[in-house]
Image (cartoon, rainbow, N blue to C red):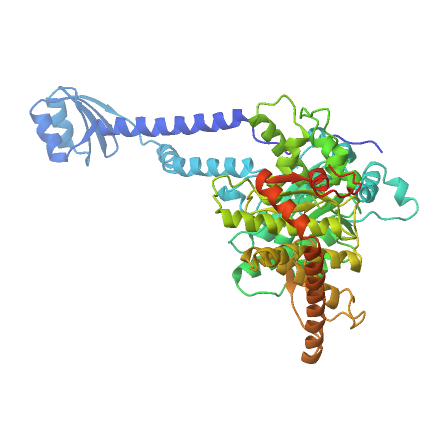
Length: 613
């Protein structure tokens, strides 16, 4: 299929604007001249005309019906209206006044009409120019572009992003290749009766490359690309959103085959009928128009393909997600180990890395990072190295950058008392010692008592491999490690601090999930909690209890059993290893930060093999 060259919509050139401006200036100059000329002619009364004539002050007159225009001998001009009579003629002749008589001016009304309508004509031309200058794609904020689409237009020759620029998300790219193949060679699909999806919804957590994927599709297909945000449709004025939707699809038809990308579609595609008020009505009108356009925006199937992105698929209207509108929903997940390494390679191309920097090790230590997080990690590491005037970015710089992103910057101005520092050292030592001694735990990375963000210290462990599920024993070990700080404080100081509040909260949440959702208790594999959590934002959306109060008591009892049994075992382990706890805490008070190998050497424990950095 021969591709036709798509040009962006034409804009009115600068010559037309200068021509209009010149015409406007000329018209204003004419009006100024006309008024200035008329101001030089003095209007007099008929009696004054007779007096001037009798006193021989008039040099000449021009008579046109009842209108008399003349010149005095001192050079001043005058005009008046008279009723021609023999008396007037005799007075003028007797005083040697030069007289000239003109017939009635047949076209005087034309000049008068032109002068009267010239301002209206100029206003009309200016409005026409402004309307023509709004090409229907941009026009942000101008009075005549309220109903015009705010979508940005990208012609094929301006899109330089392809799948080579998108690291990871292999499955998503495979699904999107169908769209590219159809745009390049539609006969390959239509010969067997296949129809390409009208709409593709990219859903996933923020920062994982949904927008970049959409642009890469347009770059691979070499076709026009329209980009707009869902919030650009809705305005305070009723009907504007629907008008912009119509304008967008009108432009898309003119440039088909093309791709229309709607980012953050949840801003306009939320489920209808949820709220009340004018704002909601306007949003629902916009959504209704979008649904209508997606059903019938093209007679040629596949000539306009809609790509949309959201991190809130749970709030989208069901009518928007049905087949025929968004036929295919593509998940854009957090990158796995291989994808993280490739993303780091892409973002580190312009960064001078030290020879010891292993991107594979960095990728292993950044599980749960999005593509945007990884880009930010490299930038922060480069900033750290720049502040130290280094020639290259080292692994130490990456370490500091990750600590800053996860926990915050070091609070160098925070001064702790000796007692607070000791409590923090033993608290973190309790976490660290349990992490080493318990089975089914992730390898220790480091422990520190340097305050960062809201934390006075931290003990970190990093997974050896990608984890997608957790066993019961792993979750029990997590609970025990979380209680390590609290129990260490009780053993050494016979005291408990508020610093364990976050640990208690996390441990309780894990224990409750084990009972209510994972079936890891004596109550059996039954789901007792109907809590719905947002898959990307990680927070509760709706809480509904679907069991009786008696069952709720049983659930609470099982959660208590897990917590108390874990506390009992943690107390036993730390009491038996009190000497190691003392050694570790005193070393922390001295050095403030200990790496994993230092901890193992200090305690005389064989280190666990790990590939983490």
